[in-house]
Image (tube, rainbow, N blue to C red):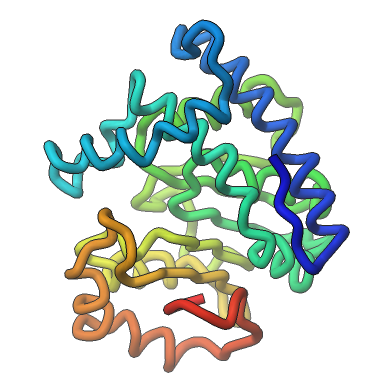
Length: 247
């Protein structure tokens, strides 16, 4: 599986990194007893849209992401491992602004963190990367990868970010997170407090379009201050992509 894009070097790197993490995902799922015999990671990934819709129908938004375990967790992990490398415009943004970067980075709502971990390893090995997300199989996969690595520049943190001092981060990634929340403004304020003055924010929030994208999210964003804070506290450097909502 490969994705062509108008940045040949980015495309080659994405393809190589995807192959590596798919192997690791397969090894992890096999170890956990969650890789069906004769199936591949790519095949598990293709099942995720059906499973996620069924899971959403019987859970609340607050517990949806924490429920990804067992068969559903394996399929989600596979889809994330493949899908996080399918957005070359995000990787191109990293190349454009952060190559050789040496500061502190937070990937908030990181999922499997495959893109941020691979990019830091290959292009900013002196950067410190913090990863925050809910506790599910994807998070345990990230921890499994960290336990197998000699790299001590990557740390898992809780979603409340209590372990990170205010105004201490140089960069924040918040990609495809806010549209899933009832309170995106509150979460954005919490992340915003951790970013130092002059820091860089990579933000993407496609309001609507997905069954799990909450209708309350863009309303909260406009009415409870998230949008106003973004306008008053940040200066646009570049767009990850020219279409969509926040990008």
